[in-house]
Image (cartoon, rainbow, N blue to C red; front, side, top):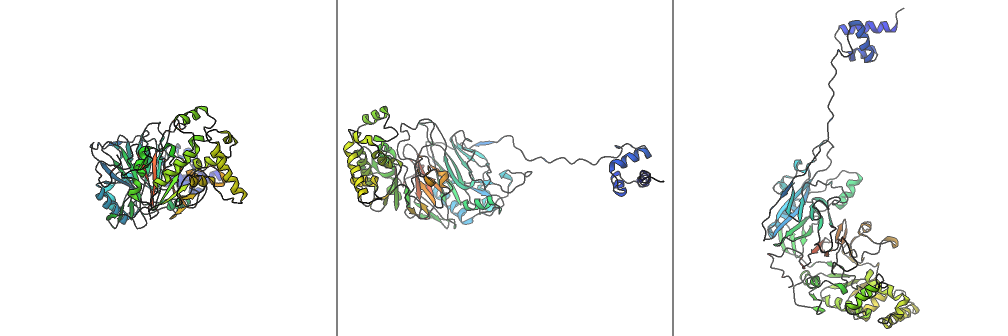
Length: 551
């Protein structure tokens, strides 16, 4: 009787004699390749290793980098340098009207256009370097993929290559220049103030916006990114003393944009219409910075009135201006009312009169008002500290302020008895102190919309009674322009102003992100942050003559 093994042996003998490989014999006979090798070893004295093995395919390794080269621009000192910096996505058509307008404006300003790139939807084993991407041919003369130190204080990270679907394009880049300014090419517009020590000048991390059309995968991340895709650029100016200034220009769907008093459309630069609104950095009149007050409003803090100097308010002529935290309420603020040393400092600085502080704040708003501009006082947490003080029974025995405390409380209780539950004691106190009737008052949590932007929120109140934050305001339906944090910020549709008061106020110790900054809103609904230096400049002034800085 013939066994299965003998049948397999004969089959292997015959097929091997024909020169077939072990693998083909195993497939023909229906046994494993290992069994065929063993049978062949007995029949032909062949070892399992006698047949050459198939070559092992080397595993492909992903692209890696081990260092980043940096370029130093070595710009000539003692002159103004201007750059318009934006971004582009590979394999994506350019927004030609916007590019034409950027080029026209670069020529108008004497600026250099720079375009950083970013790649999208490349596999793990592909070269992700922005320099090897394929970009719209119209951008070729302006592409800059290097990491360039424009000055010791300013780094252009042209090789950042941040995915366009990244929610926070500045994440991880704020320290890339060791605490100095950084600009990152990206399809979203964002801005953060970089933490620094007290007394050091503000430093910023900024993303640019883009000059290419939207092109995203139809996944959730792509659909979200599409909503925040922004045609924009950063104007970076380096003044004769090396100080850097930045502001965004954001285009409409047609590629037109406004930059302060200039309108750029159809490749032509012309005079822009008045701006729609300005949200000034928090006022805190008791600690209002004299230089910022003079440059912003033409207000002389020593004379406590308007003087004849050029200023931002009269230059931009906004249709509406918003005042946040007009009252500082330093004289009886709940944070320091139990602190004997704070009380002594308040006394040594002049007056402890709450009534006088309210009167001075009202007088400032009146002085900063203009007949051609709607002035809006937004009730903020420092303004509302007045109402909190009136609820404190110790105010009744405050020798300096007892009369005022009792009088305002009497007015408040009178309104309650009359059934006026909508009475606002802060507004009443400001009106009694002389606040003009044509100044509109927005109570805490109230609304004032300009275009499609909510400008009535100070920033201290969040959803459902929680504490407000810029990150939380991202969840609101409308865009917002707010204050409160004293820290300029742009995150998605949320713009946050800085502060018009002093950057050091005694209680803010340690590292800081505070800075002088105002929000400018154009009639198109687009906005920019006007970032100011300690000496009142908000742009490079070394070769500018159309705006004369206040002396």
